[in-house]
Image 1 (cartoon, rainbow, N blue to C red):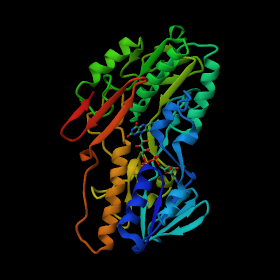
Image 2: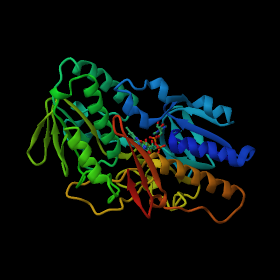
Image 3: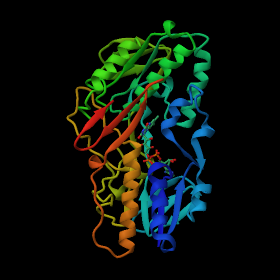
Image 4: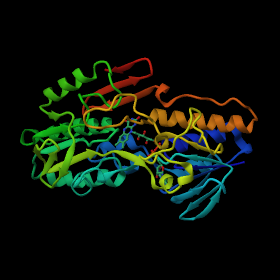
Length: 366
Ligand SMILES: Cc1cc2nc3c(=O)[nH]c(=O)nc-3n(C[C@H](O)[C@H](O)[C@H](O)COP(=O)(O)OP(=O)(O)OC[C@H]3O[C@@H](n4cnc5c(N)ncnc54)[C@H](O)[C@@H]3O)c2cc1C
C-alpha cells in the first residue's frame, strides 16, 4: 500500500514516521514537501536577535526519512484529483492509495493595505532573516515600534513572544529608553489567545506590559500600515518605523485548487473526528490544514484560534493510527476532536518563560 503525505513539517513528519513505525514493510510512505528542510518554526522568533541561526533550527528531511525507509520528494503539490487518486506536482504526477494532507497555513498578507509591503513577519526563515537585517540598521537609528496581530489572526502567541524578545533586545542594546513600544491585538483583552478564559493570563500580561513600559491596544483592527505608522480602523495613527505583525493564516493553494475536496471558504479541510475526509475515505488531514471552529463567540474585531504544534503532532499520530487500523482490517477508528487535545506551550517572554496548559477541562497560564 502506498501512502503519500503532502507537507513534511510537524504534522506530516509525525504522520509519516508513525505510520512506518506501525506498519513497517506493509506500507510504502512518500513525503512530498517543497522545502528540503524541516524547520522548527517556534524557534524562528530567536533568529532576528541572533539567539539562533537558521542552521540551528532546521534538519535535512531526506536524511531523516530515508534512514527510516521513507521516500522524500522535493516538489510543490499543485492539485489533487481525488477520483483518480493522483497528485499533480512540479515534479510530475504522483499516485497514492492513501493520502495525508499536512500542508500547514498560507499567510494572508493582504488582510489590510500595507501589511505585505511595510510590515515584517517572523514566521518564515526568509521573514526572520529580513528582520535580523532591519534590526542591524535600527540599532543605529532607533524609533517607535509596533508589534501585534492583525484582525482575523489566530497565532497571537508568537506575536507576544516577539514583543517580549524585542523588548529584551532593546534593553541589551541600551536603546530601550529611545523606543516607544506598542502592542496591538484584535483580542478583547490581553491573553485571550483565541482560547478564551485562561486563568491568570490577562492579569499576568497586564503586569508584564506595565513593568516593561509597553503600551497596548486591544480590539485593534488595522486600516493601513505605512513606512512610519500603523493606522487603526478607529482612526488612531500609531507611529512605527519598524512593524512586526502576525497576519491571519488561511489554507494553502493546493487545497483551494482541489475543489472536489470541498475546502472551507478559508481553504482548510473539513474532516471528521478521525481526521478522514467525509467524501473520500482514503484522504486524511493533519495539523493546521484541518478546519477548526473557534470555541468562543466572535469579538468586536474578528480573530481566530491558534492551531499549535502539540495538536498538529497529535492529529498526525491519530491519522497514522487510523491508516494502520484500516490496513489491519479493523473497523473502529480512533476519534478525538481537535478541541479535546490538550495544548502544552512554553511562551518565551524575553528573559522569562510562561507555561500554558490547556485542555477541554482547564486553561492555565503561569
Ligand atoms: C512564529 C511562530 C511561532 C510559533 N510558536 C509556537 C510555539 O511556541 N508552540 C507551538 O505549539 N506552536 C507554535 N507555532 C505554531 C506551529 O508552528 C504550528 O502549529 C505547526 O507548524 C503546524 O504544523 P503543520 O505541520 O500543520 O504545518 P507547518 O509546520 O506549517 O508545515 C507545513 C509543511 O507543508 C509544506 N507545504 C505546504 N504546501 C505545500 C505544497 N503545496 N506542496 C508541498 N509542500 C507543501 C510546507 O513547506 C511545510 O513544510 C508557531 C508558529 C509561528 C508562525
